[in-house]
Image (cartoon, rainbow, N blue to C red; front, side, top):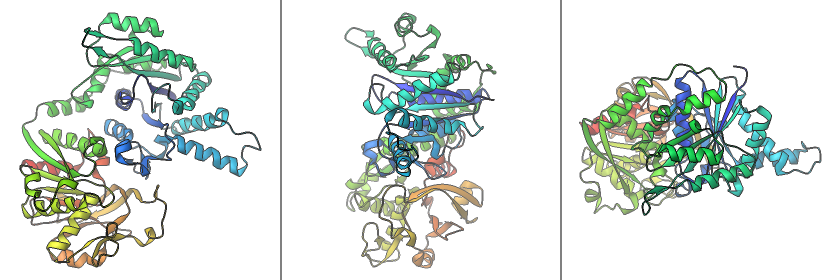
Amino acid sequence: MADVKYVFVTGGVTSSLGKGIISASLAKLLQARGYSVTIQKLDPYINVDPGTLNPYEHGECYVTLDGAETDLDLGHYERFLNVPTSQANNVTTGRIYQSVINKERKGDYLGKTVQVIPHITDEIKRRIKLVGSCDKYDIVITEIGGTVGDIESLPYIESVRQLKWELGPQNCIVIHLTLVPYLSSTGESKTKPTQHSVKELLETGIQPDVLVLRTERHLNEDIKRKVALFCNVEENAVIESVDVSTIYEVPIKMLEQGLDRIIIKKMALPVNAEPPLVEWREFLTKLKNPKHSISVGIVGKYVELPDAYKSIAESFIHSGAMNECEINIEYIHSEEITEKNVKDKLNGLNGILVAPGFGSRGIDGKIFTARYARENNIPFFGICLGMQCAVIEFARNVLKLEGAHSTEINHKTKYPVIDLMEEQKSIIDKGGTMRLGGYRCIIDRNSKTYSAYQKDEIVERHRHRYEFNNKFYDEIKNHGMSPVGINPESGLVEIIEIPDHKWYIGVQFHPEYSSTVINPHPLFVSFVKACIG
């Protein structure tokens, strides 16, 4: 296909309406119709990436295979499309300005006054087209973060206006997502917020092509007709997005209303056969008709905001459906777990996952949790810091190395079972300086991990600075904790497990980042199976 087609998804009225899910759902449908699609997120904040943001601020930081720290929406894109994203799929205002300022310092603008228009908008347009320029994609969907009317979103909206003019109406489509609130006092759904939001968009010079109305209750045809009339949009291009029990139903709802068909027609593309979505529907059937039910505890320090562990929660949905099992997740604050109350806090759980994180807050609770799971033969899954806590606990209570710790928490510990790599010791900057992205790992064939993966070599995504200290390798292995996954280049330990335990595995990487609807992560599938058993 000669011309790449661009679809922009903007939001109005309020944030968190689900632009990412609508973008991912549309992409899924277009992909199922035979088009190659990718999705990009433009984030209006000035951070260069979310890598230095507190999870309370922004939810989890997602990591791509090529080592980009990105917005959590990229996780949704991958989970829906089953295609990896990259550095180019997430752009922030910080990155745009950094690039423009660097060019200005080098003299690339030949002494001109550097301004938002054209220099910032040109850089935004360059980044948008960069994803589509690699010949792999027929359609690029770009989600613009924030809400229309926000000061920080204006350069992005202006860039879309320019692209719409440059590329023409068939190559550049705008979907606007808004809210139609229901007033219980009058028993009515109100369209005025949508009208105001579209008016705001029109003031920037953009007429939306499609409106998606987020709503608690089904909207009647009169409401859709009214929205179409007042917002200058075709009636069939007003789509309802009603609340559903799971985000994975959204593609089906969008298919039923023909969102993909409308977009294809507006872009003058061939309308290929309607997608059957067989595997997707099978997944939903299993998800809604479980044969088993288990409770799994996620022990972490950001549990007040479940978005901090978004990919883990979604991995449990994928692996739960695979095992035809309903998984009730209990979020347990690691700061509240002590040596005395650990049994009460974790009582009744079929399995325990100790979540990733940074810093000393709540680490004791994670260490007590690892010990409780080990001594009581409860399936245990430690991810990143969770794996490190399992090693610390084992060193203290089995090897009797009193005060064994990670140098991240206690740099004077006598037994640094978790330590910095040599090349990390001189790094001062926090942003983008960890071991990031995909790294190889060779798995021991005589392990539960191998039984899960069914292969010798894997590539998994990392986001951490501290590592298993190989000075303690032999001692730990001789006492019953096996390092069963090793990075072939560096010799670093990536996976530990306790062979005598029902299921006790810790991984230094983040398996949750690569679990998708169609390919649930094998370790999560195996862990859930052990919890059911």
